[in-house]
Image 1 (cartoon, helix red, strand yellow):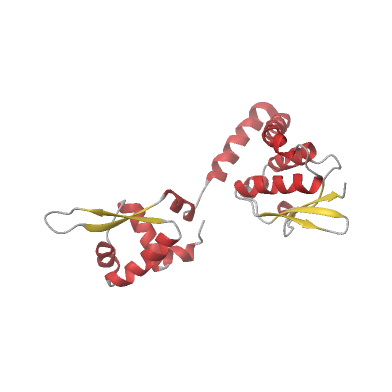
Image 2 (cartoon, one colour; image 1 turned 90 degrees about the vertical axis):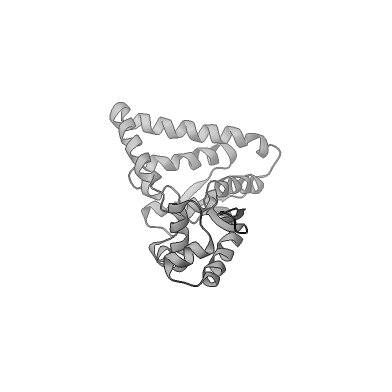
Length: 209
């Protein structure tokens, strides 16, 4: 997701307009913004390079085909996502109906399900390679995760949390990664820092096997 400054730039305004129109040519957009068609094309080339815009040739009347641009599905990631509001509302309802135990049980089951899916990939691997597999899983879910060698063993570090706004109200969300690590790392993993409590990362220390 981009911040507000992006949508104030020419590139951001183009993205917003394409989302509103569905598709438009460089000339269409140039007229909208009071820019030259070449200036707009330069921005469209950058957006296409980054995978946010696709072009296609369309026939507009008797003239030669025109290149029209539209947003790709990846462009939705540029816009504010408010899934956290919906998730918080759903979890409040779960808590209202079943109490704290219902929330805790929900995320424990999710963690066990995720651990079960990856258990086959972990067989025969040492602790370090198991934690690397988990970091790969986290990255596939939008978490900037890495595995770092330390004097005491290794650390799994999460530098961002896609559910940060949900964790603030429902810390049980974090139990998913705890359950996965408990299942994958027999030697145990201890969380020593948390984004939710003001840390610079979520850090899990795993002793050497």
